Image 1: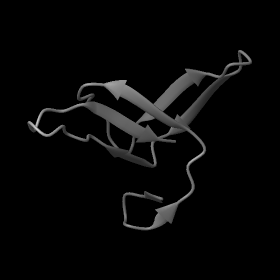
Image 2: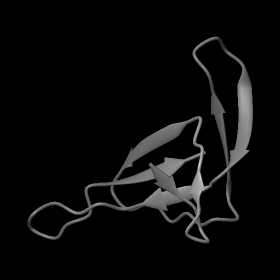
Image 3: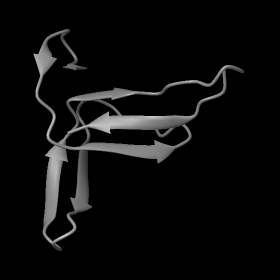
Length: 64
């Protein structure tokens, strides 16, 4: 389940995990290459930065 910026449920077609805390926001776009070689650009619809038990940032998870 993915919740968007305004608290509504949204459909995510791609999620990307990046190590550590990465500065991203809702207005940002991400360009990535699919396994078949096609390049796509999509807007971030949701993101989160989970922490481990010690309170350290583990990764940044973005949903496109």
